Structures are given as structure tokens and as C-alpha cells.
Length: 171
Image (cartoon, rainbow, N blue to C red; front, side, top):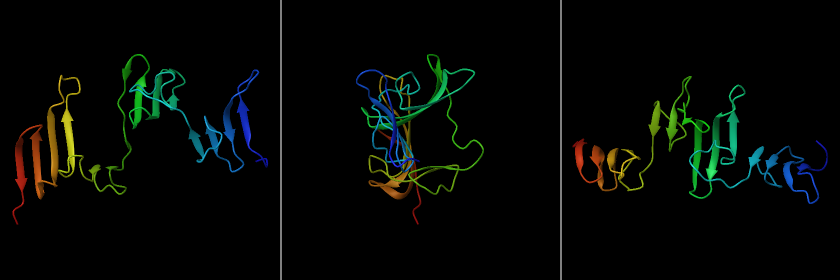
């Protein structure tokens, strides 16, 4: 590497820097001071992250460049998004560890195929909520273990208003 940063500018009169490679080897797009080995800095918002101009990072196929997987930080809604899709047509399934391994949510050491650890936003323990996002309301089912107002050694299935089934170890 040279003793100074290398950068690429947009051509024309008043040029704007588009990419920088620092003397430490960090690459930045949209930033003049990349803090990571590869950093893309841009505001983005939207569900269809792989659409043209929406997400910050997209991987596209060669034979069909409309088939894409995008990774973005939605800076309006403060949520990270991973989306696989064919632009303008449909969303695709997303496989995590299809060759094996476990997936952890709230844990760095998953012990099961899907290991969910932590507390829910309602302080009722660890839970998974299932609901129809196309319905006129978000009523659904909640599956969880105890915590907060639910006994810690319990397991419950509930809808938004009523516990439908609950098991508690009364040792």
C-alpha cells in the first residue's frame, strides 16, 4: 500500500469521492474514513432491500442479475434487513446453515437447530409470536416459557388475550 490513502472520485468539475482505500487496507464506499475492512455507508429504507437503489449491499446472479440477496440497515425504521428476491417478481426463501450447524437468536452458542434465548419485550420470558401480517389486526399466537409475570418453570401457548394452554412444573 502507498503511504497515503487512495480514493476514487466521480468525474466532472466538482468531483465527489465515491470510494476510499486507507493505508491500513480498510475499504470504504460512501465514507472517507472506513473503520472496518469493508464499510458501506448509506441511508436506506424499505422491505424490498434488493430493489435497485434501496439496500446498501446486494449480491446478484450472473445469468439473471434480477436474482439478488441484499443486506441493509433500514435507517428510518432502525432494523437490519436480509432479503432474497427476484426484483420485480417475488421474494425467495432464505436458508441459514443449510449444510448443517445451529442458529442462535440471543445466544452466541446455540445448543439446538434453533436456539432462542433472552427475554421478550413484554417481560413474559422467552417467546415466539406467530401472526398473519396480512390480516386487519395482528392477533396471533404466542409460544413461550416463563419469566416476569409468568412462572419461570412454565410453558404457555396463548393468543393476544387469553392463555390457551399452560404447563407448570410444580416441584
